[in-house]
Amino acid sequence: MNNRILLLLCTLITFCMPAHALQIEGIEIPETIRSGDGETGLVLNGAGLREKFYVDVYVAALYLQARTPDAAAILSDDGPASVTMNIIYSELSKKKITDGWIDGLDDNTTSSERKTIQPRLEAFNKLFTTMKKGDVLRIDYTPANGTEVRLNGEWRGSVEGNDFFRALLKVWLGSDPVSKSLKLDMLGGN
Image 1: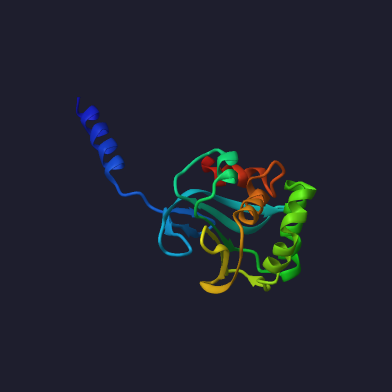
Image 2: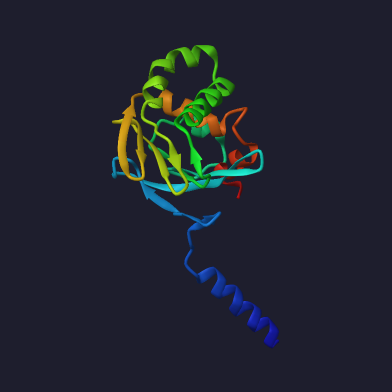
């Protein structure tokens, strides 16, 4: 009988404890953030580690207005959303970063989609610089401002159009994502 009471107390304590932020590779991932315009609360949909050839590159987190494991629903949405990337690799050159966007979009969009977003992709790629371990890239979508880019909290610029942001999300959530395990994690599988 005493063991049952102890088990019940332990269970109650566990469920009554406040939820803590997710932690991946030493990076604290908050459960909620404000949208790029500061007006909308976003919740963590999921987060995970991007590895390439067994090397840890960055920790990515996807924030939405409401959690969903449905990639198609996320890609067809038009509301605020955010992706954060915490760089954990020693250095990512601007070329590697921009080549990554290009390759990811080539793998996950049609030629018609790429033709439509090409001028905006070129403008987007100009917003980047070499990133180093500890840098935090934040890519927000707000209906009023489009895709906003901030590096370590510093405004870098924006690119118009929900179609551009949703195409960019396909790099992680498309049919041929940069990492299948990261896709599952960003969809809440972790």
